Amino acid sequence: MSASQDHDVVVDVARSRLSDFWKLEDYWAIWNGFAILLVAFICFAGSGPREAVEKQLAPQLAVLKAEQERAPFKTIAWYNANAKKDGVQARRNDAGKFFAEYLGTPRRWATNIVESFYLSEDDAKARREKAADAHTKAKAATAAVLETAQTAEKAAAEAKFGDANLNKTASAAVEKWQSEVKKEARARDAATVKGYNLFTTLPVICLVMGLFFAVGITFMGGNVPKFLVAFLAVCFVAILAQCFGNQTQMRYYGVSAEAWAIIIGMIVANTLGVPEWLKPGLNVEYYIKTGLVLLGAEILMSKILAIGIPGIFVAWVVTPIVLIVTFIFGQKVLKIESKTLNITVSADMSVCGTSAAIATAAACRAKREELTLAIGISLAFTATMMILMPMGVKALDINPVLGGAWIGGVVDSTGAVTAAGAVLGPIGMATAATVKMIQNVLIGFTAFGVAVYWVTVVDRQAGVPINPFEIWHRFPKFVIGFLLASIFFSVLGGSFGGPVASATIDQGVIRGLSGGLRGWFFVLAFTAIGLSTDFRVLGKYFKGGKPVILYIFGQSFNACLTLTMAYIMFHLVFPDITESLLKGALR
Image (cartoon, rainbow, N blue to C red; front, side, top):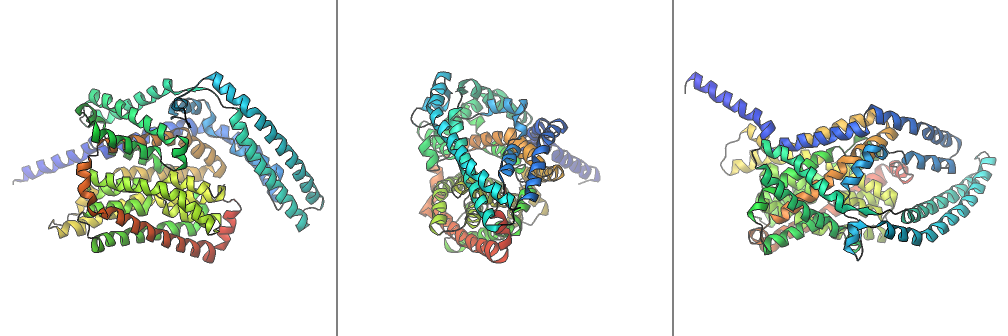
């Protein structure tokens, strides 16, 4: 080959690499995620919203500081100021109200499925009137307990907070008052319910999401009209899944919208069949990768640092050990033929569920059926474990910090972790969610590690020469967006300061827009997975039930090792951090 021909080849390769930025799905997931985060940042964390939040927070922070210096326990004034502080949320501005209206998903319902989508103002009024009496009684109970708390706190103050017994009595009385305040809040919510009509908003959000994804489809060479028609059909199934997932009994048993999305999709695919016109909308990776970029913004270093070294050890030491041991068990003991299936199930179970499975499957180039099987097993066991683990924590009389850390390190899904942790109370829920957040950081590192292992070991064993550039080709690029989003919003939150960051990023950027869209994208992805699944093809990967055995072994090992590590770190090595968390340091 001549020098000029060599030059032409190099130029063609360079052009190809450059065109990847607007032709590859992974990069479009990054651009989509960044576009959403940019809009959310402007609406909720830009200079205007931030200044408004700071102004609202200033008097409450002053009271909190003064009360902390004045008394050795959380006083009535402290709790009142803290409640007002928590009520300062950037998403309560006009932009937040607009997004909330159109991002709304089917509501909770018990027996009448229509209530998931529509509640007339007359019916809402009837509900308010029915709940009014309970709210009145709750207010009276709170007022009575408040009077007792005020008397006890006054006695402690008159002693200049120097009497330990008076301080203890006052603290207990104030905590009891807070318990009644929470009951009153629940009663107030029931007495202030409003009518809603999702039949007018759901079509709008589906169309907007379709047009949003269609931009990338255009550059990637897809047929936009065919995609939009198929996408709206996928949206319809996703809405049904969210509806069934919000049924009272389904929520109780942990059968989530994601699980229903796969179930409904599989039923349709394996009975009626998936028509050709629907297939352009089954872009599983496109939807979920965009959602994972948004997930990166939710992983804030400030929250990770709040739980300290114990949480990092539980998440970052246990997880890779469990992943490697489970993979070896699958290869050496179970002798699973497909290494890609083995590593995908192992990563799903050990790291953080479906998010890790998607990244790992991309890194090792697992078949879609293998990814579907891994996710299906994960969802089934997650629904079981989110019920059984809190029961186990209570049966073993484990404190909420240790119990929360155990749940956070073992249960796969972030949503399931939060729900399971909530059973242990606010401290258990906060600890569980934070440990899971720390674990989520490993998504990118796991994908990179799997890509390196596959190129240097698995491919070499198959006779493929080692090519360092293949690591980059295998590495899922959307993970870069995931990490950059996490770094950016962590740094931003650090510069804002805790209370302002919470009000603008957590209660603005995330809860105001990106978190809601991420939820939609995940359900769309699971719906597409279900509709893409053929039981006849899936069956050969399920041979002998080995994937289930692999998951059970790995999760059992994970549960034992996580509890051991959590006990060592939170009780033996850093008991002071546990004491701090028990006092509400993660609030």
